[in-house]
Length: 590
Image (tube, rainbow, N blue to C red; front, side, top):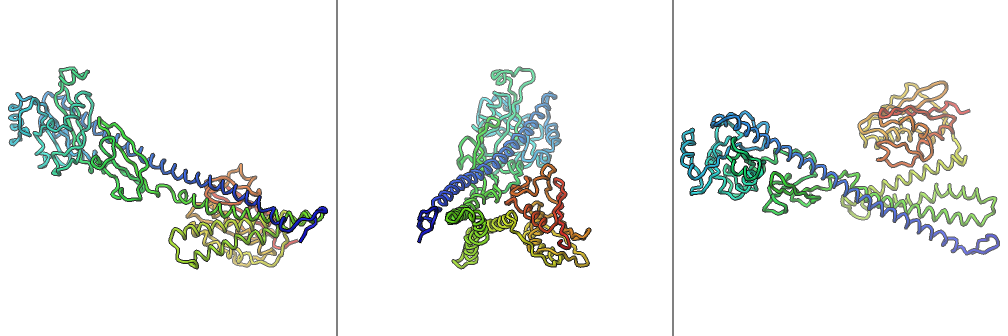
């Protein structure tokens, strides 16, 4: 079979083969773009996870610094007490610590104590003096002779004014006998600054494993200089100290409101089980938590390593679902576009066989035919097949498969809506849209439109308020086109309003016209955007337009259909207050 074109014979198979290459090229080009978009969407998930963890990590570390600065101030206040008195008695020390109300104001701190440095020559006199000070069983332990003892002389627990059994047992303990304690005390005395110990077993606690750490603050003799390391060693008189139980102190620090975030703390610069001192979430070991980052800080003379974890829920679902949405929606769109291009080129090739006079009108007719029939056919078939799979015709689906199919179905529905809208726009622009007026009960039509869109408005938890007129209002209009106008206006009112808001719909007569108004309480429109509201393919930027897909032809189409009825659409709007769109339709067509 042959077609005739300018005296040449063209085989029919060549006419069909020519559009295939450009269609394939377009499909491949769009798939490249979709692949890049997919990568971008994946990177966005990674970036948002990292940013969310970074923000929470900054809160954790800043909270730690802030809380320990308060504990430091507490020990410095104790230093002030000693500097203002020649000899601080046990009762004075107890009154001072109790006045701080540590249990209420500084949760996590277990006690505050004073450590005296005693030489071997001073040991017996020191023990006798403390025993005489209402501690009859006091002694320095562990036993044995040493050049200097760092003996705990005073200790007041935060739970009350009287020594509990465990705190009392700690009196007289020589802190220098523990290498970890002595190392921290030596650092403190050399620097003149507060210093934390490594992980130790607190004397006040009955557990055998290391369960806490100590905060040391050196005190120097008042009549001796302590500006250099050597001077500080000579002038050292003792230490203030505060013990902390690992679990108690960190639980009192942090109030993390993000359940998808967790962290652990390790002593030293390595992440290993034996140096773990805290986990913020009991579920941290579950596969849902993945480590995102870690940071090692030097904190009051000790290195601590923080490991930060997050589940996928730390990133909003809309962002997490974007990559699969890009693949599914983009794939469908690319295939549909390639099919459209194939059909358009094929029809164009056929049209070239006709005379120049008929070519233009033939192309228009073919375009409308494609939009109304052939362009919808692939998308309609996809819709049917996806629906069948969702309903279980191909077997039982798991929840993830159902979710993906729902996304594909919704994407295909949006493509069908765009094709329909483009068809009506093409007809209007070509002057081929004709009214088929009849008597329309406006109240009933408005109620029907509201009822049809209940699924959308209820999904956004919006209330549509409509009180119809007591008497019937009948207009001479095309019911299909009038319904399209009302559906567009109600859909826009819903899409550009926040959830849990109200949409007011009213119908009234004015000077031979019926006025149908839709009032929302949404984002509104800025005055500088008023001129763009009814432009073809125009979308007004606002906080919701970035979240809602749209073609930008809905209001243009509604406006043109209203003009076709010899009516109009007007609006009023204020940013962040809402908008009112009113369609005016003459009761009788002239």
